[in-house]
Amino acid sequence: MLAAMLAGTELPTADDLGVEPPAWLHGVAEAASELRRNLLDRLREGDLDRGEALLDLMVDAYDALVSVDLPDALTNGLRRSVDALRAVLERSRGDVTTTIVQERLRRAIDAQ
Picture 1: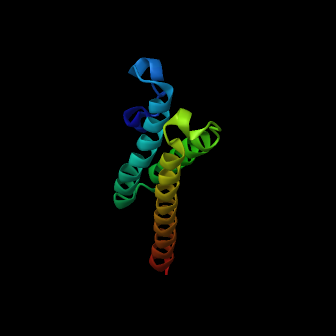
Picture 2 (picture 1 turned 120 degrees about the horizontal axis):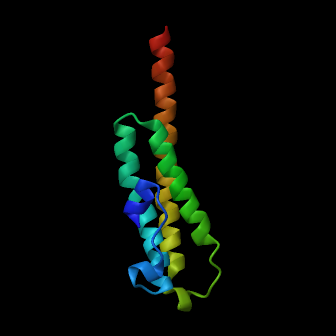
């Protein structure tokens, strides 16, 4: 899942991976959370555009997962995984925002 997200390709289906749908949903949540590592690497390298694109992927995954309206008994506790993803997403959003503001400040200082 993570490799597909990073490559910008279609996610493998549950059937492709040979897993049940609840496990696939958890895999999407885990992969989206793991995007944070790559996002932080891109920010450290100064690639803000890629960092923002990865944040957008995380948001898309969260939005899709939060819309799953099934009992936890059917999804094996997906709500907890989605809540964990939200926490990672909010920290990542803060990191991207801070980096962008710092870059704007650096450019303003350099322009003087």
